[in-house]
Image 1 (cartoon, one colour):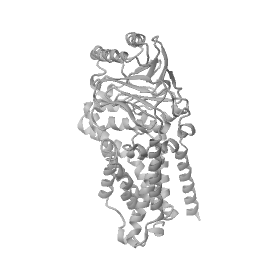
Image 2 (image 1 turned 135 degrees about the horizontal axis):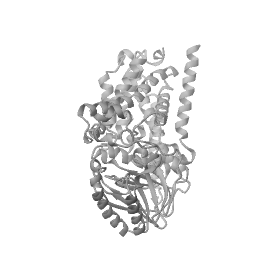
Image 3 (image 1 turned 180 degrees about the horizontal axis):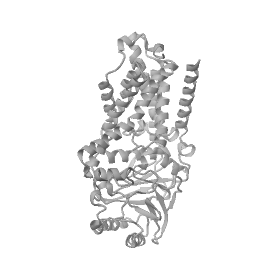
Image 4 (image 1 turned 135 degrees about the vertical axis):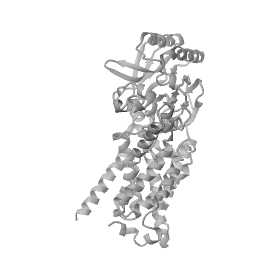
Length: 517
């Protein structure tokens, strides 16, 4: 088959298949690129063992299993906090392990499909192979984020979170182009690993990948170096971080003490005279529609003379939402955003009747409804804001949708108290830096237990409040918008992702046509 095009002369030296253990180890090491460790250079080589193994696999099934093993190891590392979260919620150890392993196994399917497709791509020839691998990766990444259940965090570009220069060109190319470049580099390196045993020269693709990487990094550094300093009248924003223990948050006996904590923070926030006060996700103890809660929130809006964006559960019978409600200084609710990307076992319980006896406090979660797919930005004194709730910030399309609709500030409210001090809150926080750069908008983040921050349009933290630290964070946004039209990406959409999908479809069509001859 295609193997004869490029590997027959070398396979005796390289071997017909890489050990499963080696592929799994490389996947696990790749997981260390995400927060908190951020060993980002591993991403530029970490896929190479899998690519070498997939092209050496003697069957499609073997290629798929190798990819699945590498992906399972990657997600076993990056999603280790899922097990801890289950245990915090009182879920028995066997069920917690099963939940973690089931999620890991499901997410690894993408890697299995990628490995299989990379093996099949050999039919296009050695020079085209690294490029087709990169196209296949982006097509899978792009489509799965839209049409399959995800927990986010599996965009390959996230591996480069530590250095902002890598992020900057995403304002033109979108969230998948950096992943394309990483896979291209890995593919070119894998091709060289196979061919170098046969005394062949360094392939052109490896030189091209290196040149593109250097150009990308240089362009990103230039964008940072020439970033405009803030100008215009600064606008104050106060961010509440109450640090309420999630596992007593919905205890009716705790409602008064939770309000007392928030009262203290709101009094401190009022001293700064901000234009907007941002509360975290589900900050109100109980339903916002309850008269006592509604009057309490309205009273604080009137007392502070500021707009308040309040995270709360909201009932619009017969539907119920995890929402952010905007109150004006007169205490009136003048807008709301309803969360669109719901969390399994957080906002709804799948297979409730079967699972309820085994999942502890998670069974107490009410089934929420998803908000409308298209929601208008909310008008505030700091400009039109686009809201995301919790892990919605991990999915690029929601923030781009808000920016393309006219939002000039993105606000992410969250409650990562479920995860305590695991890696989960760190993963969720740093994706906001990508959203800021991609759309060239500031990001305001309010977390119940943190991390709360103000992030500028280049992804820099202007102000932040660390994990599990209660307090009020006061940040400032410039009056003059350095990107009044947003980014090229926010205006035009994820054209690079769609381009890879079309290129993948065209390559597959040509492959099928050639096979029929």
